Image (cartoon, rainbow over all chains, first blue to last red; front, side, top):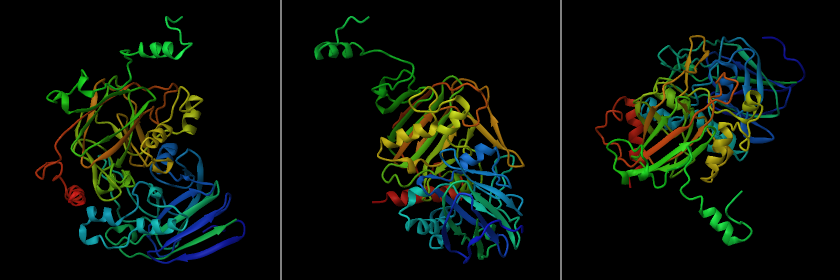
Length: 205
Length: 276
């Protein structure tokens, strides 16, 4: 991993299955490290000044003409403004179409026996609740370290990951942000290698 | 020059009332039973909505469970962006990611479901002659329209889909936070192996249509603005026709309801929610 520039203002490990929130100021870099490999990190962000402006997967896809997030990808808001830039990553690409697992969507994908399992939307709701945000603030998110290919006929699925222990992604904030993360607890598909693990968060600059 | 004096209320009233009976290309037909393009086999009294949405225009409507909603690309260059809410509890809304992920497919066509963020089906696609839709690229916004057309404001000549949505949802008491990721009808986007978006500009034949069935009471919000990937420098979009009529709720033996195990559970979750 390349050195981060500027002082380290935060360096934390997010336990497996847990939510995490932080403010990332314009110009600072958030580094996420996939400590044990193939751990999906579900990620939302909001403009600190106006949280009705938030990350938009659709605006990001339209602006870059590609569904995958790679080094250089500009992460756009729902109002067409750059919120962050992927300044570096050791993973070939990351996902932004797969969304977040929820208790409710788990009942569709796997059956009603999964209804009581912990899920990313539960983490997002808990992470956002302390800021007064709620369900209306759930939108399509980023899944760092998750692999969702789309085949020629439109077939799509969360498949085996392409990350590995110690791989990372760096995002530089282009505005003051509130970041809300779910360290994905999903155990019914390969997004976490069927074994949720901790990830490391570093904010520098 | 006017034949009315509008200097006093009586004259102004006469002037206003003399407009009755004017017809323009893009407007609602009220009552909808009077629509000349009522679908074959639909009783006039079953018609719920008939409206032509102007280029750059928008419309919103509550529809009950079982209602059919037909969107028609009248001239071959419409782009109808859609938001969708549970009318009873609008905090439940369309979830594009779940719609694609749960159905294991990214493309919208006949037989597909539009799923909510609560594991339920909001609407199903019962007929589609267009075959070119988009669930990836979302709505244009003020900034993207300003870059392409110079302006993007609701009060100008190049309204953007997001700000049209803002007005549409506001009329149901909803706000900017309720403008969720949308689907775009009539303009196709496909994904290449390397993840690139491939926009299908057409040209498309006039009269293409997609027909949806409401699987719960819904609020539908539509905006007819150029697709955000449309490469043409001019604000190119043509009117869209909206027709809705009353219909029976989906029966247990419906082929769309039973097509996949995931979809069946989405119907069952609705039926369970509606049990009283």
